[in-house]
Image (cartoon, rainbow, N blue to C red; front, side):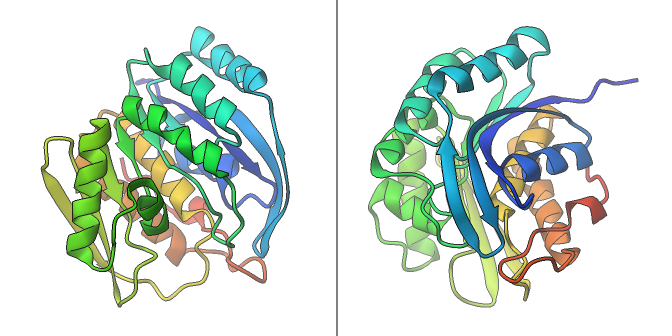
Length: 265
């Protein structure tokens, strides 16, 4: 029997289970991976917003990472909410020699609008983008990381190319925050090659944790050995299916239905 890919998710905890580490574990498990975690912060959170955040020390975050990598090891790593600039810098130093894929979701703001990264933490993202395989910014995050206009698909592509060239990393510019009836995501490789994914927008308010789910799905599929464009394609299908199967919980932006989605790998 083939062993499952070992996926280490480094992110914050969502007490309501819709995003963060909880979404990562569900996603990795549903896609046939073995989920491990290093928690950066603990949030009191639900579908209406984030009521509180407690950030762990960088030393304890690194201790969790070391416990996993020194014993079980990992085939891919997903990075989500980091919690502080010190954690970002510490992780960049520790993971610089990691041989597997690193998928970095540069979380700045929760779906509810709560700020999850201050300016110092965002500044620390650069070192992590330098060592990542893929960075998955949504449009507000891409704007913050590039300070470039994103008024249309062409401008989004230009900004994604600029970020990819600056950090020698593949960039998936996620168009979910854009307007219109369709969601256009653009995957750009450091060398300039681009793949466009274009789907009809789903009419749902149950989108809490979509970014966490997408990035952990890509990491799991990369861990399975999928080429990056195909991993992104399958991960997007997984997220869409999870939105379509959302259980309808909560009075705000509800969680996805990870458990209702059949494995895609």
